[in-house]
Length: 241
Image (cartoon, rainbow, N blue to C red; front, side, top):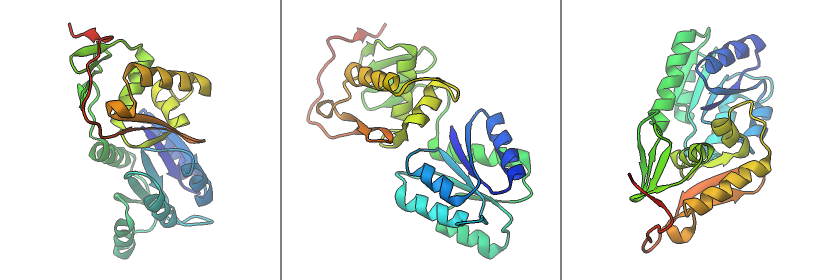
């Protein structure tokens, strides 16, 4: 998962980052509200961990902006010194999903992150994943369009699975690269575009077949379902063994 952390205390930021990375998530850190807002305008994240009190704009304002402008529901966890009942109620009513008071207890932080991600995304690694006519088998890296297996390379399968797991959600280019190729991957934008083009063709991700894999200028891609009349068979696909 891709997680953004906002805190103006470098030591606190490092502690949270080490916890997130130790859980095998990608972590992006910010020390002021304006910098994370600039990132949120062009990047996508699976979870926001926010401090409340910051030198410029508050974490509460950042969350309100996110709720008003981001597609879907990106979970928000406050980690803050604010601890009165009034503060907690205000944060939750404004849209926070969870609230944690400093000093941070690392095991509790990890548990709260896990709980939020499970609650919102509800995925289990290795389980078959079914969307409409598509069935993904992560254990064998196979995908079936109806009864027919679609021949995909491993990276193509991983990218297709991630897109379908996030159906309807705008995903930034960096988010896709980190999720499929890894946080340190060196891959050109054209290589990502080539993989997207292949998936669009191999999986028939076109409006006449019920899906649109759209490029969003300067941001990334969004896979969305669209209504169609009838669907056709796949004469070019591989039959299920």
